Length: 318
Image 1: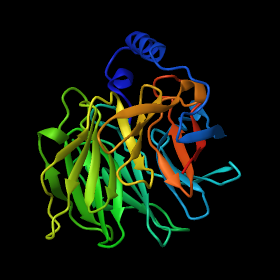
Image 2 (image 1 turned 30 degrees about the vertical axis):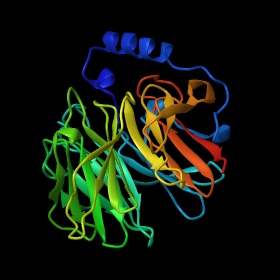
Image 3 (image 1 turned 180 degrees about the vertical axis):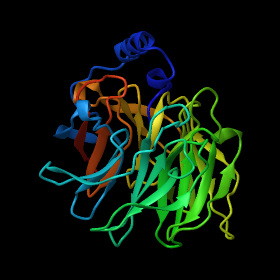
Image 4 (image 1 turned 45 degrees about the horizontal axis):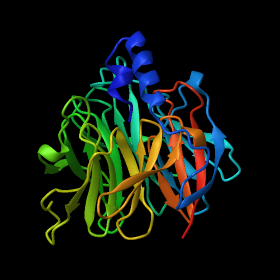
């Protein structure tokens, strides 16, 4: 998601902070194991606010993205061709906490092709979870607090429930995918923000809900109990500055985490982490990661760089 450096300071301060941040980024020119052969698969139009925030991948390798500030849901075909599937309705006046303008965040895809996204506007009539069925029009399936910032999203296909992070309130909601009332499923200090944004990225993995906390630089694991309630929050990794969303590699609990400071880290089960992609590979404020059939997908929103939002692909070596 966008960093506080972009939205909570003056333009001059933003530029100075971004320059300082990127000056510290590594400048490697090739991905580091277990990634290889990075290349940009699609470039987007910054002037049109085509800034990809989150991603899910279809069976044919197509990437489904949210363009956060354009309020769009798009499909990027394996050929690199980009097609807008839908645009969410604009609020009469956006009052989105921390951001000030409408923000489309997380995305998840059901087996029938239905796409779910989070939408934050600061208004009660639009903020919540929206669904887009193939060939249909987007509609809201669940309202969420207008004074929050719904962000990460994950779908449990088995139970038909959606999990959503709220980066302002620092909680995880749960709601039926077919629609209904959202409930706070997990809360606690580990999910709360300290300065700008707390609970952010979100994934379901091996009987648990996993989340990141942007402000605290942590990866969290929350077991799902036999009754479906949240177990104790466990900190599985820390010290990962500017961490956004993430994806599991398919090797146990090893994951790849996007960082807003132009880095993608490999995070091991013991909590150690190393950079595997940097600015030298072409990423521009990476926001999320997906893994599909040995390919790693990394959308870059260019929130801090203001240059070349794109979708990068790399090979995941086994």
